[in-house]
View 1 (cartoon, rainbow, N blue to C red):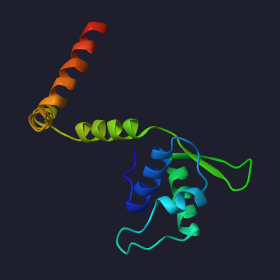
View 2 (view 1 turned 90 degrees about the vertical axis):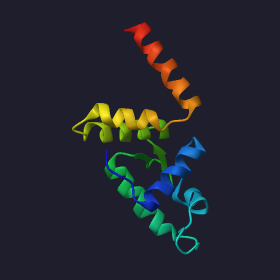
View 3 (view 1 turned 60 degrees about the horizontal axis):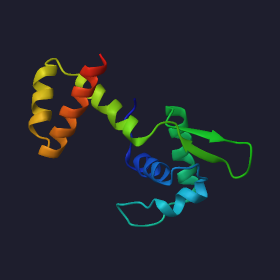
View 4 (view 1 turned 45 degrees about the vertical axis):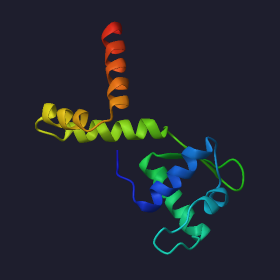
Length: 123
């Protein structure tokens, strides 16, 4: 899965937060150039949406005007994929997992234990 640039992340955040399809005009007020704090041009948002579509992050409904865009996967799916990719790039998966688990909060560790226990029960 390709990494997302700054504007791509902002647009995906808008789509994930909305929970529904959005047009570029709907996305526009939800994103701003963090560096300058200025509102972006709709053509910039359309370019970002087009790139996200080519990368497979969004799908476009072109049956009506303006076109509407929907995230093809949830934020949780995206983050999980990033975690799998990072783990897959490691020569020492155990070391990576140890560092990860060592850095999570007690609450997150409890969730991980519960998830792993449930996985073991279904395996």
